[in-house]
Length: 370
Image 1: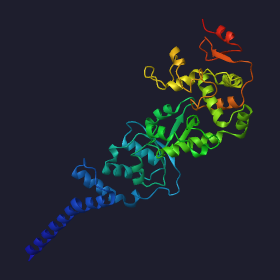
Image 2: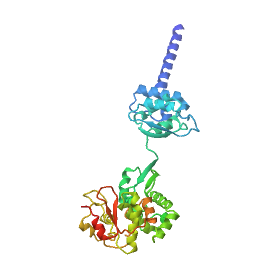
Image 3: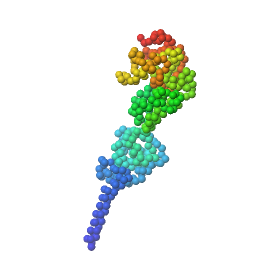
């Protein structure tokens, strides 16, 4: 009878052992996989069991935010920073409740090998699992797109591939041929000239039409009543004023001279004289493959004879469209030009970016560099 009892005890012990083995090798990993997804493939069997057990032990702590009402906080991961350093700092800054919990989850999922260095906006209102997912992509939802004063549309298009916007240069240039509705105050032929130079904070998902609307709306907001009154005082509507401002923008290096340069061009327009502006020819010529620029410089004698309605040496009046996207300074210079007797100007010979002005063509020639 005693031997029989021993056999029973041994059998029970073996059964318990097998049950424990099943629990360790089967149930725990399966349960963790069900709750948290499959473990990272590089983990060994023992590591899978260990981290599965850890996650099950942590339980709701992985899915419960530290502070449901917490505000976003900036957080930066440095290049080559260790995973443990990241998790510890997150706990120290009050974004997560426990560094070890996040560390275990990162190792289990394999996210510890794919943390992205960069800037983040994280909140204690996110759970540990949410934080782990956020740390896989430091790319912000919004990007800053900069349009520089004096750029033509092709130069804006060239900056798109590296901007973070999913807009191709081809799609942009095609869409820009049709002005946005908010530009009704000017009724332009294309969007050229109406891409107001500025920094634009835009969602990465911005479509080309949304982009055009945003910059056109910005332009419209800057064309105040006093500017429009200034344009009218010069005998110009908004579209004509933008065309002239686009020329002033390209002719000026020193912004302080813009009102005087605008005044010279208005003097020329008032007497029916050609504007004689090199940038208008540069615009007509287009891209210069040798100089790898849209603004061929210097112009040759043949360039000055290039037959185009944009050649303001040949054709009087304003060109058909703006030749660049002018700044607010250039627009204000056209609205409020400096009155002067001058009809000519040319760059000074000292490389300062300033110009010498003249009333007559003979004086203009005399001002030429030796």
